[in-house]
Amino acid sequence: MKARLAAAAMLALLTADVSPAFATVRISDDRGGQIGDYLNKYRALRENGERVEIDGTCASACTMLLGVIPRNRICVTPRAVLAFTLRLDADVRRRTDQQRGQLLPVVELSARRA
Image 1 (tube, helix red, strand yellow):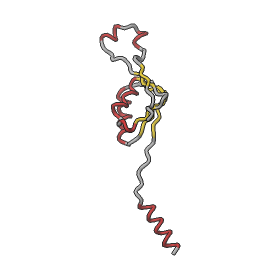
Image 2 (image 1 turned 120 degrees about the horizontal axis):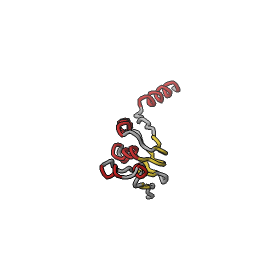
Image 3 (image 1 turned 30 degrees about the vertical axis):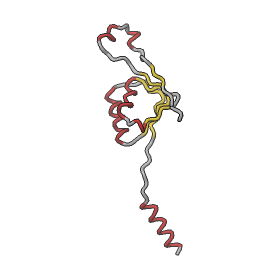
Image 4 (image 1 turned 135 degrees about the vertical axis):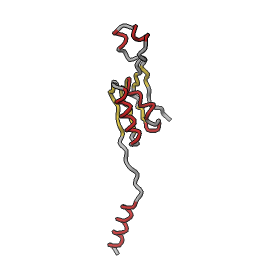
């Protein structure tokens, strides 16, 4: 009798509908980089169903995750800072070298409380 119960329990465990566990990618100090590299990385995260937690600075190319990863898989903590760079066009080229490297504007986001 015990053997049958053990076998039934084992069969139930083996045939149970188990959903896959997805990892959470944490962003805490990402200053950006090459756009193509970030698009490839975020597309892979999206396809794998991964979640992203922004818990610090996410600047420049890093912010593209907002357009690639579904909103329901992005967590923004109170420490998150999204920094967007200026578009490189004729007006930006006329600016001084010192101004060109700044991250403007900086938008601070915090988690909403229900």
